[in-house]
Structures are given as structure tokens and as C-alpha cells.
Image (cartoon, rainbow, N blue to C red; front, side):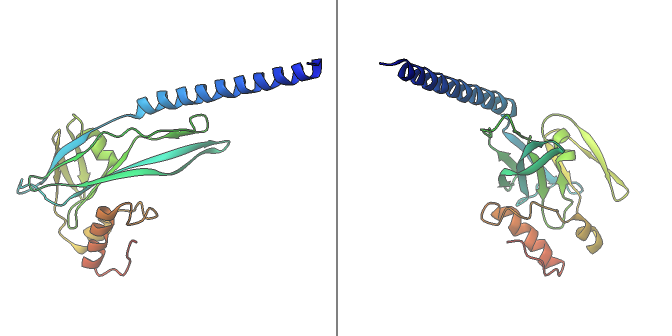
Length: 202
């Protein structure tokens, strides 16, 4: 075997060694990042803030976004979503979920953003749920009223006017599709119809 052949074998072996190392390194980072974002389950109980009666059929939505690092900042895109309905007791549970990031060097998967929505009631988003669903009491002000939220119990006020309900319509995600989020799209379309709006999420 000539020197050139030996050199080619050495270069090939070195190439495969480097590639194997990079693959293992990337997978290790992915597993590490994945464990950092492993969370859940998310559970709680939703009731009417005035009557204290449980609210059945409330959609609880969790959305994960993938953020890509760019020279000018971050670009975020939809990654995945989970949705559930509250039962007759007003209880819900989104099972534990650990998104897998196979591109940890150029992207990161954000923690879930939550939305709670039921036609005719105030819609809550992550800015309230982050402090409420887990273990902290909090309060928020809406339409001039202050509402207190107890740990594990979410109290939704019923909206009184059409204007309040129009302002309360959730903004998204609108580009995911009803096949992925059938529960959420159904209740949003139901509220649009109740309000006489022609818009239909598909």
C-alpha cells in the first residue's frame, strides 16, 4: 500500500471521527436543553369568579415556539401545541411534555405560552398563568376591576357587553390550522359567530 493510499485512509478516518464527535456533541446539547425545558404536568381548576361554580368546556392551550438565533436577533416559529377541555368539575390537566431540539446550536425551544378561553368569559394568557397555575397567588386588573387568583384555581369573570367580548377575542395562533388545534379553533369560531363576525379560523 502506497503512501498516498495510507494518507487517504488517515484523512477519511479523521473525517469520520470529527463527524462522529460533532454528532455526539450536538445530541448531548439537545438532551441537556431538552431536560431544561421538560415540564408539566400543568393542572388546575377553573370556576366562575362570581358564582364560584366550575366551568366546563374551557379550552386550555399550551404553545411552544422555536426561536432561531440570527445576527439581528431572534426569529420565532410555531413548534408544537397541546390543548385540553375542562371537565364538569372545572378541572384540566395537560400531561408532561418535553420538546426535543435537534438544532441546539442555532435555535432554542421556548417554554410554553398558555391561553385559557371560553366564549363569554375573560380570556387569560401566560402573563397570568405563569404565576397562577403552579403555586403562587396573583391578581390582575381588567376593565377597572381587580381580580384575585388563588393557587391552582383560576377564576374567570363573565363579560357583560359585546365590546368587552370583542376586545377579549384571542389573537392566535391563527396559522396552525384546525386539524392541529380543533378545540381552540372551534370555540373561537363559536364566539365569532355569537358576535356576528364573518371571520372563520380554519
